[in-house]
Image (cartoon, rainbow, N blue to C red; front, side, top):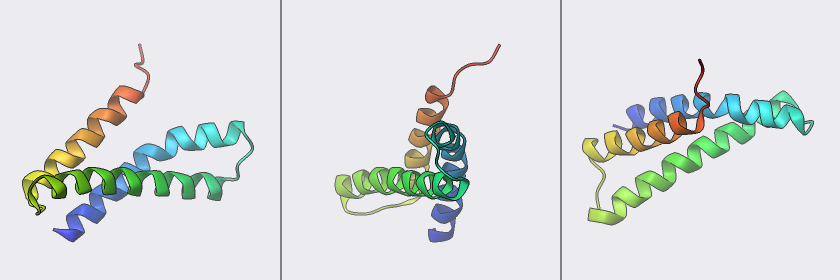
Amino acid sequence: MWLDIARRTFAVIILKVTGIFVGGSVIGLEVAQALAMAAFAGIIDVAQELSRSYLADGQIDIEDINRTFGKIAEKENKDKPKGK
């Protein structure tokens, strides 16, 4: 279960890298700083959603994990501009 969470969290970080990297380059951040910010933002997103699931019933099961990462994926897809 924890390995699944770690792998999915890594995927969230990859999704966040593009937005933070572009934004960071505009304000002059180095690549390493932008990557660190993306990692931090991804981990915080996952931790918040898993915490909400835990607070609901005092446990985290596979359904909670799937729901958590589904919410994050939907949010990331909404934030991306649609291409033609």
